[in-house]
Image (cartoon, rainbow, N blue to C red; front, side):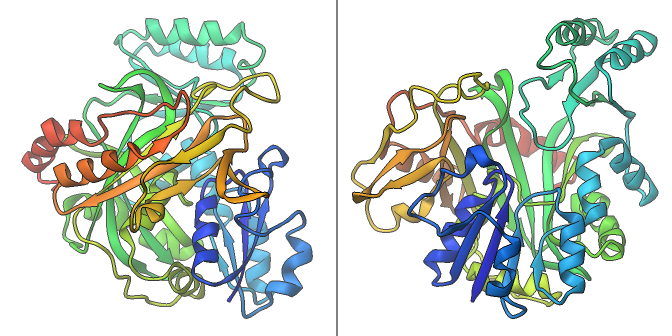
Length: 432
């Protein structure tokens, strides 16, 4: 099958690689010019996706891996193309968090106060007039380096952070969101939707956003994730948070991966945000857990068809392998790591299938040599699986030991907080 894969910044770029491995004819379009040097000599590319429409044709598949393409998706569907991805209203759920909370409330979900601000000064004024513990966020999936979770109930630390941001010309024009802080356990629940109904099992995930082990340090986009699949539609979290939104997803003709991130406490589940697209790095865990071919599955979802997705039972783990300047951005257009070789030591059997590329390209003169091909530091991801969580942790970290990148960074405790503490609390509250 011919597949045109359209990405903003390679949030699911490795999926295009998997589709090539399955034998499909793939052309990858990367919207951000600075990201186009990745996956060279790994996935065929194009610099003009519209020019490829005659090539992919009405019998092929167009995959969008990110938000921001809603108008194009609707237009293409009306023209008869088969399109996997969101919609205009689906995009808005992520890019306008305040609007998302209105939709959540309309469909019966619990909500806490959430306010979007175009100007940093307005956010400061609001916290001064409404002192409480706030969470500072950015809309969409931009760099999370300015996100901050307040500690004091009077908001004094949040005020200090916002006033500091106001003095920084690189930050003070950011559109930010203030969300009332909720103390509890963060957990995500997601499922694929085909425009009419859910497809495949329910996904549950636990993210690890802090930079250092023990959940210390700055907030990153994500250091690693624990996930598992279930077919139990009577699960409390699915019934309270995700399933009530099925009529809305049907109304907006959403055809893709949809997830709600929540905080759970004794009072219930509080939705924080929607992810109406492939999430990262959870997409790499989907690749780990799925047994069915990706091409078949994505085509069925895009066509509005049912699909019996085969998958592995147990727990899956994904861990980001990064290098500096991650988790921060850098003014210079290049870094000391650009062009550095990436080595894999003693890989055996199926090990390569559990290594997922982002800022990687293949050496044109040596097909077995890969190198770092970008400057942001998101090099690759390693996944593992186990019938039990300890086995999944062991499988993943044994494989990480086979990845050799000078000065590489990763968290060595992904999944352990859930195993040691959070799983019991979630079971006590009836969510597992």
